Image (cartoon, rainbow, N blue to C red; front, side):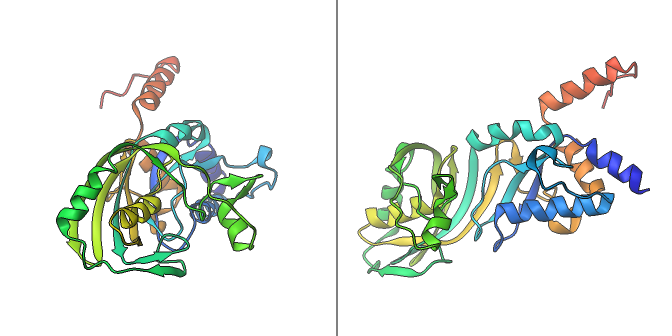
Length: 272
């Protein structure tokens, strides 16, 4: 049985969506998933990267305090993850006016407080128009971006002197206000790769002559994947459910590859 599971696990290839809960990093979630799969298959992991027992990766870091969709690549699927990094993403976020933090979200230390009672819903909606389309954005200091091979967030926590990265071009496809109950407001955001929702909320607060930080952040879509009931939560992180998810979420290129392989093997192609 263990040999069969090991064989099945190592034959898995493709992309599938998992749910990352708040409070853990994307890397921690991925390592937990990988450990569970290897343990179920009775396999041990090699520590050397080039000799990994199981190739697995994710298609873009999600903030540790955020939750939602994390696209995972397994086997040859890891080669497809680059498209996830640059593709379209959707988020739902709740911001809080009048409060700024060093991390730009609720996990950080409050660094500034400002009045916000002068801000109306109309003010907010007008401000959002200036953040739609091709814009420039300064990434957060607490981020996965690196300096000299080390993450900025790690350098900041170690007390190192770190300068913010220069503003860079990003794209916001859609931005809508879905709730406004000061100091809280909720946005639906659709954006391209390299975009930081925390920076958006910071910039909106400054544009409204106040300050703001993220209270809650959920990624609801990444590329062709959406956060729904088929997204694998931790209780379904096992070989069988991963295999089912790969079949359910097979991309057109994967489906065509499987069809051709089936024909090469001399079997009748799947007509479903």
